[in-house]
Amino acid sequence: MASAMDDTHLIMDSIAWLCGEMGEISIEKGKSALGAKMYTIEGKMKSKAARASLGRLNNDSLITMLNEGLDTRIDENKNLHIRLDLSRLVRGEAVLSGTSNASVAKGKFKLEVYPGQDPTSVAENVISKIVG
Image (cartoon, rainbow, N blue to C red):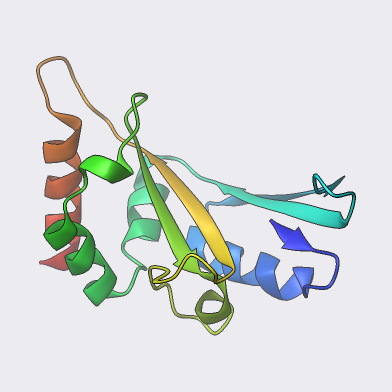
């Protein structure tokens, strides 16, 4: 989400870069709980493009995710959640947000999990392949 004060075009360009050529970017105008104007900018993509998008994350961020464990990042619907530092994203750096005070871009990746598979193991495998 971006406030009316943010450069929405710059943020949209950053989300488009993160999503890659196959991503679909949309923007929705709304109001915050306090009534301030805000925009929700969303990027959607298919499986292969999503994997490529995850691969645009800084390698150190991916390693940090693996080292900290992915259990807390995966919800009951088998989605992997990330929060990227927005100020670094608009500079072309996809880095995990380190503080709760920073503006963030939220990411949600649907994991392809089959019966009998553990979502955390699937996510670890995907990220490990990206890291190399």
